Image (cartoon, rainbow, N blue to C red; front, side, top):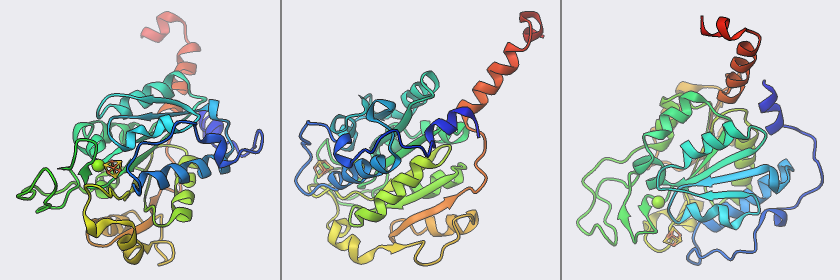
Length: 294
Ligand code: SF4
Ligand code: MG
């Protein structure tokens, strides 16, 4: 573990924070019943459990309904460009490694417009937590099919149905080597809070796919009540979170079985990008300029 990582995972509470300390005064403009309200609530609780003060946290997002999240927190926030949350977050983390950096966005932002950034963030392993609010639709732009919409999805703006296969975000993250991969649903607020907390505490890139229902344009079969009836918790079912192959098998059921919990957690977290940068800087500092060029 590097000095950077220890900052994120510091077990010492500086003071006692409550969920309210992370909630800004800005009133969310999400539709009533949107799953993103619960995601915000879970995030506030997870941050309170971790206990870092809001000014030591940065929340970076792209564009979309869920990307409004930074404005609803008291942390530093950057509601950036469509699909560009991950590169911006990596830059923030490199420039200010002492910050706890969380990235938030939707399925379109993360797996279509920003899809090319995900594998590179995973392979670099920066110490970031990536929360994707996956509702299988573009909500902000009024209901087009998104990269995670199942084939055949008929939506408000795609009346004849999708003719494309969906991206499987869980398999995608696992296949590219993410060391922490989990899925949560707003219908299980307590479980989602714990998963977000664990993801934030994990030293390295942690990915959480949150099946956050869009009540306005989303599939009626993927709303909170239905999710509550369908969800199956991996930990309750005894899944071994260190078994990568089994995690991939379970992830293949994305879209058919609604698993919640941790799919994979590498018990031996590899070096983070930030940690390696520090090591490289120290190695170069020990050399003369001529030696460094050799
Ligand atoms: Fe939420 Fe959908 Fe409304 Fe956007 S359009 S705020 S995702 S319910
Ligand atoms: Mg979406």
